[in-house]
Image 1: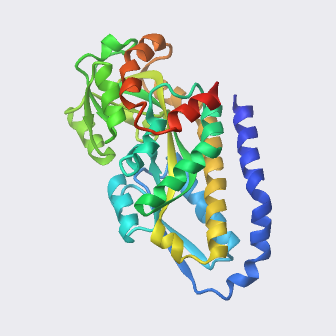
Image 2 (image 1 turned 90 degrees about the vertical axis):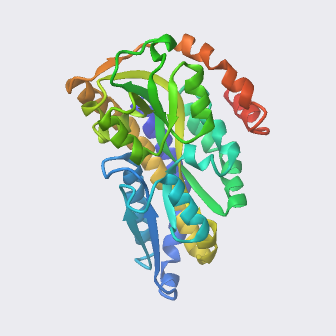
Length: 335
């Protein structure tokens, strides 16, 4: 499996290598430009794949522009939660960020098609859609709301954790107070599964878990590990219920201010950084899961996925008409 991930990442990086060479040839022209500073923010810590992607982006942009463009990183929600960051990009107070797809979908509803439960069977299927015409068309939709979508990084397949007990089937979620992203698809998904879905910003969720005001949450293994959720969450279920992209996104006004040669470099650096983060996620997940189990977290490896899938069928009935042609296009591509 790791070999497949490396091949995919290599193909993506290879696809942008030739333009990068052209960009390098144009570095001499960078000396004619005034220095440009970009402020890139995200809400997670320096151990997270978002930060790995952000650092790689920073390195590539500064290298390819010979330092003319500098990138300052703001991790740990220093500039606000993800909704605040996106609103800041719209009005120009934040330049760019790596943002989970769920909050982005609050600005362009069609993006929430990726949030539908059990849509993608594996990472490779998700990459095929995201890196193809469907993914690009959805990035282009962001310009309607004054945002510029650059590339799809990765949050990953999301899994359940909780402090109450093992979850192997939907009945085990009955009454569980579960934090979900502020996104209606997530809210409806977990309400159909029987949980008390509580939409909440991630920064608030961390304190809520510590205080015991919520029982659980759902996130990829890398988030569960990097935020040491095993300290408040004693159980995990490898439900892999949703594949969540993350997006390198910039304020459209900031994008339009950039010289065309810088736009090329920024776009391609975001694509290469995203491929790098995907590869790192795939390589780290097994070790992270082992660390969590060694710390005492009990993991349900084989939940009744057929029962979960059957329980969320009403979510597809409710949302299938809301995403225009995108759901149908995705399903056709995956057949």
